[in-house]
Length: 96
Ligand SMILES: [Zn+2]
Image (cartoon, rainbow, N blue to C red; front, side, top):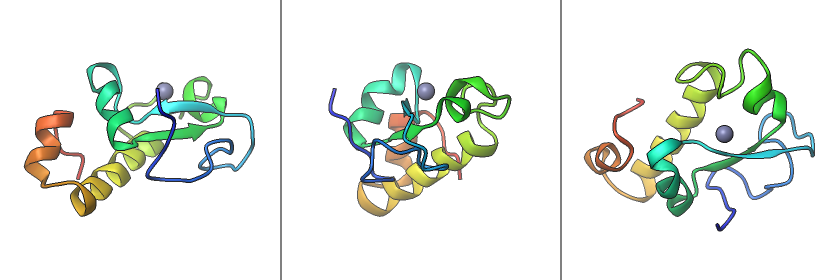
């Protein structure tokens, strides 16, 4: 798996806290995991923001930070890759 992100060039520091203990998170998970890798929708997150905190992206899906990351990736997609219809076809729904 190629580790890269459209959101940051620094995969070793948390995208939010800048701390250098990170997990690599797939912004779109499950069946969309491969598409996340293809389009660079990965993001380094400190473990508390990834899976451990109550507001972490896996504990609080589709709101707060998780929603923000999905929206940022969708905006990037629509600016660089294709239309909203294509985004929905690949990622299942619109987050904007
Ligand atoms: Zn994750």
